Image 1 (spheres, one colour):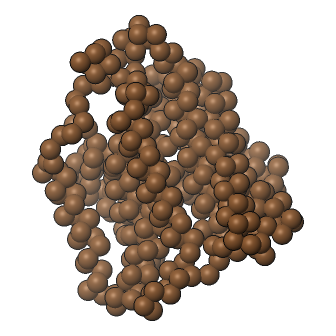
Image 2 (spheres, one colour):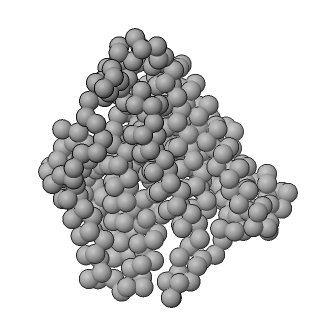
Image 3 (cartoon, one colour):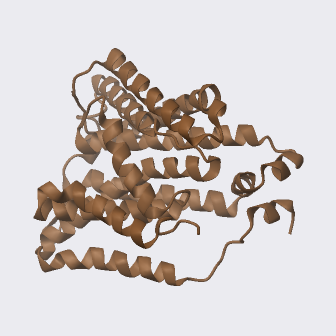
Length: 339
């Protein structure tokens, strides 16, 4: 065992605990109980929609939880990266539609336009993340109160810049031809884009888990959180690594914003703040710093929101706040958070 292993602490491969069994039982109840009031066909449609919404929330929440869990930074400007991603994706789709690639394009052009929009959003999000970390956040490491105040102010500034560049009004977002319409599987109508959202979310979760748990880079990042001095003595530039983590979190939020824009088919300057509220609920339910917790929390929030929206629309957001309160009362560190 080398110094990095010592710095990280517990090795992977721990046995299944009572906590994990409790989380599984709670998730099963959340998924199955709505069948009492909802017919099976509608239930399946709502479940797919809830999973899709959950995966889009996960893309934002996981960046938020990574930045806090690995860097101990409370970044309340995270929603601004989400909004910038939505507007960048919107602009790319607008430009490509002028070339006939989006609404009337072939399958290849539709897929290509989607990938280009997501790549552009990720690139802009990463660049903004680097600038914000080096210019703003680096000056307030270790001081949570200053982090909250300065990132809230930064969020307001970034939202105003959006209004200057793109205007203050809502914009309609084009949906690529390949993602329009639905699949009809045994009378269950499933929106095509929602299927893509689920696939992307699961792929990101799997990729992050492998990166953090199975690669040396992930080991260095986790070791740097536990014992920064040992990592620096071994020759790693932990400051540069943390900048990369912040940029990665911002890029994920921007990708989530671009996908959310297509999901909702519209964008507006305040979309980042609205999504940040749900992302914070996801992170609190799942546990700060836990990628798996964010994934579980996102699924819980997405499913609960869609089930309750169908049954009692006015309580859709309230039920997730209630779930968050119950989790905090029973387990203040979140479902998958560390003791």
